[in-house]
Each structure stands twice: as structure tokens, then as C-alpha cells.
Length: 356
Ligand SMILES: CC(C)(COP(=O)(O)OP(=O)(O)OC[C@H]1O[C@@H](n2cnc3c(N)ncnc32)[C@H](O)[C@@H]1OP(=O)(O)O)[C@@H](O)C(=O)NCCC(=O)NCCS
Image 1 (tube, rainbow, N blue to C red):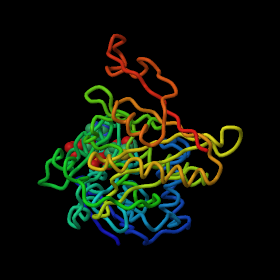
Image 2: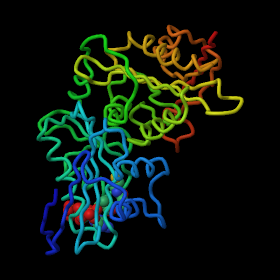
Image 3: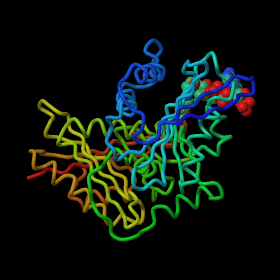
């Protein structure tokens, strides 16, 4: 789909909107979009993210992801890009990223135009919330004009116009049935990100220890948005022991996630790390889903699983799932700002489950 927009300075912006599953490929044109975004001589994204981008552009990504790629040109030269993705079935949560404007064309309103074009159809089709992460104040300014607000650290979220952010967190993951366990899929990108970054954590500080995502406001904040999903998904794809199970409620919403991560080879391959996020209304389902993930991995010879907890309740949940305390790292987790050496700190408890 092609669109034309006149910018304030008089330039004509030609925007190619590549809808889910459309216009993807591996032609030189597609390669030039990939190079425009990854900046081989001035890289700004991690390798895992660039590998996913290659799949999105080439059309080789799992079709469970419904992603729209916007490419803006002036006089046939690529000047800006943006990308928005939802699940192919449940399209109410989105992830926004790969927003880049050619330095020579910045300040002309290109990111603004692309953000509107990416998000308007999402809201119109019933979108409820979209997530992004950035530390760039200029990007934050553009996103704020488009309804995004700081959520947790560098994470910003826009909720459907007319909705309150706090109400959204309280209501979206409400109990609706016991939930069905299934494997993760690429289309869960935004739903997983929501579960990871929700402010309704039930007091659980650890969100993903491996990815260093914690929630202990006001001073401990998330340092990643979509990146934890990309890293964990890549890890999951490379080793059958790295099982990743999610719990889907009656509305198809992701209410729990459990993933295991073991090194793929060598003497540590029988020992895995467990990361999990459970919506408060589904805490009673924690053991069932944790056991499902471990059970599958144990068929491949997994011998021990370790997980980290700070809050008492998270420790209890792990205990119910067969974990025992292995180590307590006293005062390891600093609750105040990094600059404050006198800030309060708390213990980090490592729990382990040995498999038969
Ligand atoms: C962030 C970025 C995408 C903005 O792109 P852009 O096309 O220049 O953005 P726009 O022209 O739509 O809007 C820029 C806004 O910032 C303001 N601004 C302030 N300082 C600016 C600067 N040094 N350069 C450009 N704009 C600046 C502009 O005035 C404008 O605001 P206004 O419309 O309210 O006047 C671009 O700077 C970029 O590619 N940065 C590197 C990649 C990045 O950080 N991406 C976002 C991460 S997801």
C-alpha cells in the first residue's frame, strides 16, 4: 500500500506500508531496508534484534506475528522506517519499534507521520495498548505526542485513547477461566512484553532475572522492552531443553509464562535457569505451568533447575513447585538509586529443584 504525505518543508514523503504478510522478500530493495535500519557502519541494535528484523523484512518469520513495516522515501531514497506488530489472532496488544530517520532528514516530521500511520489503524481495529522502549529524548518527545507515556524505566506505553493506564493494568489480566497451556509463538511478542512489564505484579520484584528486568518502583526500573522477548525467543529456538510455556485464558490473553534456559552444550547442559511471570489472578496456576515446562525439558535429560526470588510469595510459589532454597545472597539487590551507596538493599534467594 503506497501513501503520499506533504511535509511542512514541502518535501513529498512516499510511504510504503507493508501490511502483515505482504510485500516481503529478499530482493535488493529489501536488503536496502535492512541496511538502512541496521546501519552496518554505525550499528545501534544488538545482533539478535537484527536477526529478527531480517526475518520480518524477508517474510520468513512465523506467521503467528502480524507485523506492519512502514518505509518512507523522498525522491526514491529511504529516509525513515517504523514497525508495529501484534499477534495474528488476538490483535489488541502491540509492540512498536525499528523507528529510524536518516540523520539528514531529521526534524521534518517523518517519525511523527510514520508513528501516526502505524498506530491509527491499530486503535481503529480495537487495539488496547502498545509498548516500546527508548532512551532517546527526541524519540520520547515524538512518542509522547502520540499518546505514549513512561511506564517502567525506558519502557513507554500508549493505551487506547480514553482508557486510564492504571485501569488497563488492573483489568486486562483478570481471571477468565483456568487457562490452557501451550508453547510460546512469535506472535506473543507484545502479549509477553505486557506480562513482563505490567505494573500489577503482586509485589514480585523479579520479572526476568536473566534479562535484568525488575519492578520495584520508584528507583528500580526496567532496562528493556521488546529485547527480553527477542533474546529469550532466540534462546528457545536454539535448544529443545529451553522450553517456553504460556497460559492463555478464555479470552486468548497470555496470563502466565515460564521459560527454561540451559546452555546448549557441554558440562552445564543439564542445568537450567527458570524465568516466570504469572498474572496475579493466576498465581494459583503457577505450579501447573512451571511443572509443564520442566516436565518437557526433563525428557531430554535435564537434571536441575534454578530460579531466583526476592519476595516471600515468589519463594513460596517455587517451593510449591518442588524448589528448595540453595543460596541466599544477602543484601545483593539494591532498592535505591545506583548512585546511593547507603540505599536499602534486600536478599536474593536462589532456589533449586533436582530432577529424578
Ligand atoms: C527519534 C527519531 C526517529 C526522530 O525522527 P524525526 O523524523 O527526526 O522526528 P520528527 O521530525 O517527527 O520529530 C522530531 C521532534 O523532536 C524535536 N527535536 C528536538 N531536537 C531535535 C533534533 N536534534 N533533531 C530532530 N528533532 C528534534 C523536533 O522539533 C520534533 O518535535 P516537534 O514536531 O514537536 O517540533 C530520530 O531522531 C532517529 O532516528 N534517532 C535514532 C534512532 C532512534 O533513537 N529511534 C527511536 C528508538 S525506537
